[in-house]
Length: 137
Image (tube, rainbow, N blue to C red):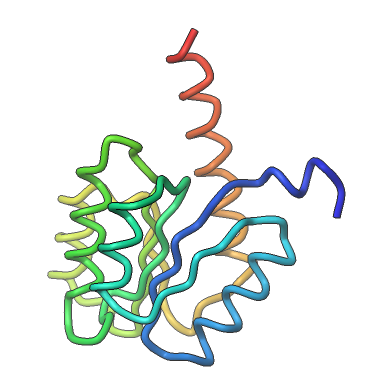
């Protein structure tokens, strides 16, 4: 892994389906991200309280309907201001409105195109890093 790839950023991935969680984690790590993958809302909530992440990625229907949006809501309140990416297999108007109201950074639809997610994460984390580098000077 080159140094450039090794510094892509840290991601909290919250997905209750083990196969999807494993696949996303593996692909994102191969891309150069540090990934903490957790199976549920409680573990994600705990991880966000313990560590800062550049991005939070979650299924809207985490464990039960809309819990992923609650996780997005909590992530948006964090001082570290991670980018928030959510995805769903049921893109209802209400879910889209809620995501917009929460200022979710990216909303994707299942079946998820992993290249789309990787591209979105790269843009969002790059922008976040650039913003933080200017705001700390």
